[in-house]
Length: 167
Image 1 (cartoon, rainbow, N blue to C red):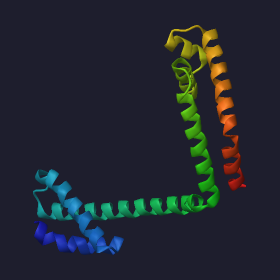
Image 2: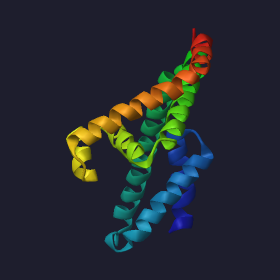
Image 3: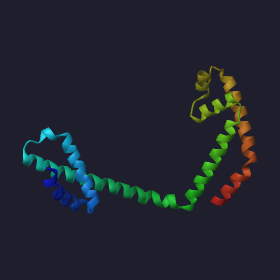
Image 4: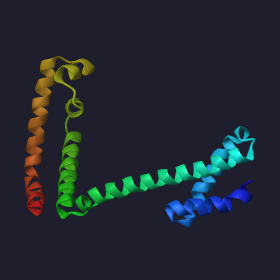
């Protein structure tokens, strides 16, 4: 069955996608799906109709997928290639790296509180999770933010340089 239909189906698929290798792959995928349903097509005419429809549908799905991919690339590639985007990413990554480095230098309890805050948890939720009073959370958070501001302040020159590159 494979031998008798393969070439004809590849030619049919190639009429849609204009890529011989892709056409062969699509036809092979159809034969694999047929193998899984082999008991359903006892009649040769029904089998032939299934094969051509399945190949056509795979081709159309592939074309649609390629169009979506091309549109996405068309919209995002200029942005990704822009120097401004690159510098924004560098700045963002560097500031994030510094921030997380400094968070790791905080006392363990403050680290946990700040990480929970960065996850979007409210003070009361953090207090409940950690088994602490709300005022303790507020106090630790305040001190942690103060410490982070001081440490980041020492690296403000780096941030300024990165911002200057972006201007």
